[in-house]
Length: 265
Ligand code: S5P
Image (tube, rainbow, N blue to C red; front, side, top):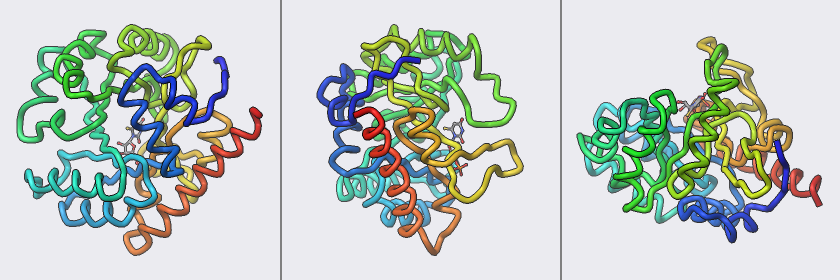
């Protein structure tokens, strides 16, 4: 692992991928490396949490297919909130099929993910064709893709050669793929700048009894070199404290980033 340290602002200036540039600039402008994972099942709750957490986040991560009363208006309202509070939207679809199928899952169907999600993600298990399929739909729309190279859960099979091959795939598609869902920084050469968005982040608990494993924002950002912390239940699990918890994780993530900057000065 090579550590050629640059600030988010430096990276925004130099990054070859437009979506990554937008995200890095937003992070710097808003002083936030926090992505909230809003895994709730009602439209009203999703919108309310997005509105309350909006000022503190750089990225809103959705699982749009768990919303019982999904409709097109939900997407319209999320887009309005994204503009109002200045955040981007990441649909955590975890595509995992052949290229010809995923391009339809991405662009068509009820959710039409490519039409509104700035970022989505994919497993690499089917091989590189999955990137080709998603790219056909997403690249003309200016969207970005991240690959799952390491999962956060106990016993995950995303390790060793799987992770190495996933990074190699990303390297061959840098016009569209700009980073990873992972637990560590993934760059291998000094000129590489993949963003690492990392889930399994919590300040109060170590796990959830279903395999999830939590680390602190400090561990994720300073020790493991990740760029964006993804926090779900640590924030939305306290429905009466959305703003307080979002601010707490935003501060913890940003303080950790400032510490990382200092360490490399
Ligand atoms: O390896 C992973 C990849 C993802 S995208 N582990 C994860 O937990 N996630 C997602 O991050 C998961 O689907 C959920 O939306 C979020 C973590 O939520 P939390 O409530 O455990 O913080």
